[in-house]
Image (cartoon, rainbow, N blue to C red):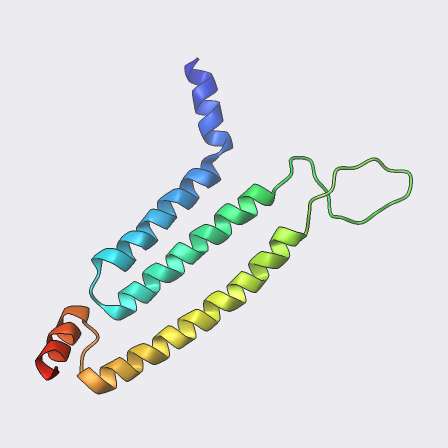
Length: 125
């Protein structure tokens, strides 16, 4: 009984790691007040989603989708991998825009701490 549970855990360790990494990223986005740390948390969260999505696309015993006449093989679907490549490009773009916005916020308020920005904004309104 215990051996079956341990085996089941080790067979799906990548899913557990994806959830743990996702929670770390979510914590960083919610709990930190520094805008750069929030962006890093967003990147960690996105990486966890990439790991989870690629893990679900894996086929045990699967081969590259190259058709060879006369063979009866199980092929891995390349679509999830292509989608993740697109998602990586979107993640890099999102990070670049977020960092540009942080630079503008720093130029306007002189800080990247969320609490101080809100305080200065309330004083000016």
